[in-house]
Length: 404
Image (cartoon, rainbow, N blue to C red; front, side):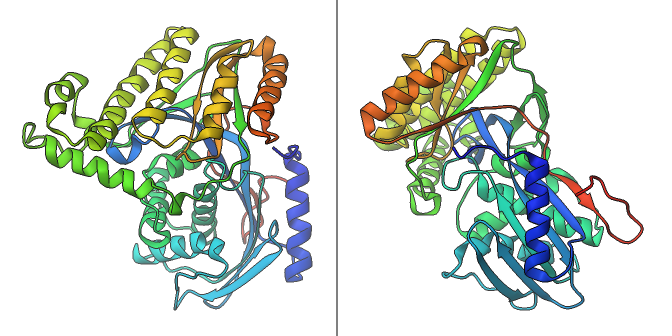
């Protein structure tokens, strides 16, 4: 991945770019992190369990309120800008990157909030289409921006749900709640166990002496154009068919491994495989949290490995590049466990690694992956960060949270 620019430098650069583009300084700056999921893939939209961390890569949004209903967006990284009215918000095919902010505006207005127009400049060091949830970070940062400018009451779980609705109903990706939730509510120095049905959550610390390594295959993935929505439909079909035997279930979350094994033979082969992944993955998350809380990193690593095999063979969302990266990680010194992460079909894998062997692990994985695929990967150690926050505020009656 590109070398990480220190956060104060990113903030100063964005302020200068805002002034250059709009001719006046911003009132507000908001940060929202990307995420990497340690275990629990494709379980969130099945009402299941996930264990992500918010990473030290983020979207930064600088803004100033307007007196009209005009929204002006400037994507600094793309050197692209777009203008629309809050009175007439359309989904667009040109400059599609703006649909995330448009969707957030739509759901906030539907909730009854009176939004002002706004001038926005934003930038990100979350790699796009790498499976680290750059889209959710944009949505959450946009929602926190309007909430801060207007001052309306909205809890962070509610804000995450609205951002998920924006991506589902406006952008057109039937994602679950995990990405928006961890970006809004991430916990410093800990993963977050999230129950995607009740939205109950709690921090789970990682064992000492281990680090999280994100491994970018450099194969981009387009979630809306992938088989993501198809997989969700297949899971829903599984619930319908299993419901003939288990009428109380409303999602795959409600099916135990034992129940699935009892009734699996009645499912079409492809639906059986999809359901098996989700049901066993939910159990792996719970077993993984138990392993971490008793300090058994090796047991957690074995569950990560099993998760990848399930995603590869049963859910069929891996690809040659992800498999090559994970296999290189499995063979490298210091590895505790490794798996693909995110929606699949490209993007990133994640590994838990002994901290003392991080350097040799990264070097060996990088060489092996490049020899296997011809692609030069990007690997970096990440830490668990807090969720979205206001990093600068100069609104009327307020003082700056941080200096520019």
